[in-house]
Image (tube, rainbow, N blue to C red; front, side, top):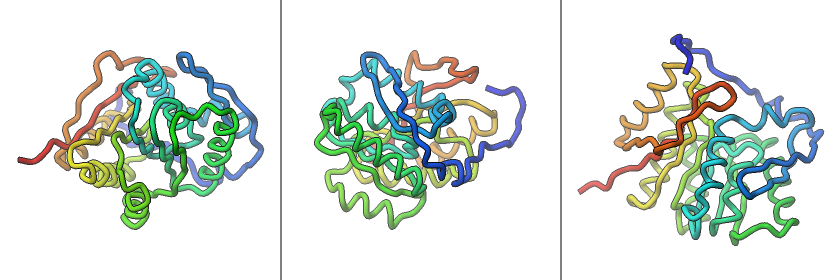
Length: 233
């Protein structure tokens, strides 16, 4: 965690993904090797430290994914969701950016061509956090709902945190206490550290640190939180 209270956010404008000069890149997590299309010479920038943290955790605990239906928020190139597709029943990858969705669909097709899929469904859907119409369409399409919400290093702009957690709240409520949000969080500023916890608590969520996950990734402190919405009695 940084020692200052800087409000500096990390910004990626849409043009970052417009370059369609892709290269095939291999990533290894536990016993799983993933091959994904990434932007040429940009693989390191597109795999955030939180994704490494979450993928290491999930690849070390594959039984927690068995038989589950998962939705990932802010999927990027799909490195976390595609790993999960090897262990669970259904995975929905989401992003708001059309160019990102293009990469996601290429990587879904690539993974399918390798015959690695355990899940009966691996799909990409457009979802802008806070967009109730898009979220409603997803919940209508995937009527069984989701057992697990995943987010890897998706809290880096303060303006996006409230709408992120409102989106998570709707997903959690749709499953009436049966759904969990697994967030791989990387600390960059004290203000963001506090904001993430405060936004969750403000919406009635319970935030628990997953034991043994706090570690240093790319010189930053990361941790995995399990976030639930307790049943109301």
